[in-house]
Image (cartoon, rainbow, N blue to C red; front, side):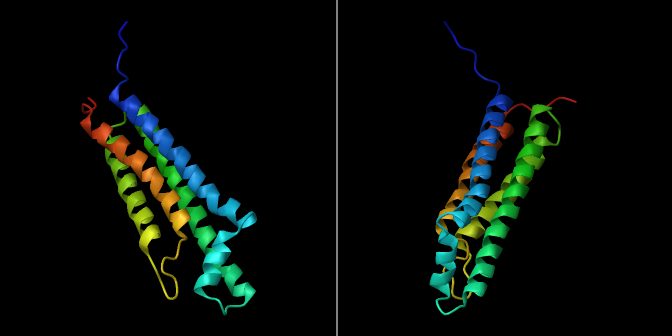
Length: 152
């Protein structure tokens, strides 16, 4: 018995859904962290041990809020790209590639950007979680560009 290969755009869409799921996890993780173990507060406190609690909380809220907004924008980007690929839209590859590049730049920035007393502003755990969707995105982009161009 032979199995038919899944079409390239279908395989790309599967990777896109994986990226969407990873982005949702990366978006929820800092919020769940804040209401449970609160490692982001520890991260801020380690950078600024002499700050009063209200400044630490404000910085923590800024970091978590930033990660949540970036995550929601990432989810919107995944949904747009998935819709384009599923509809075989002519713009789907270009838009998907642009979204991937933007997401990768933001994820790399989150992993590496330091400032003032921070070695990195975004805690490493959350920066790493934010980087995971780019792996799925890269796989999807490679598949999309290897596929035949859509015909008008």
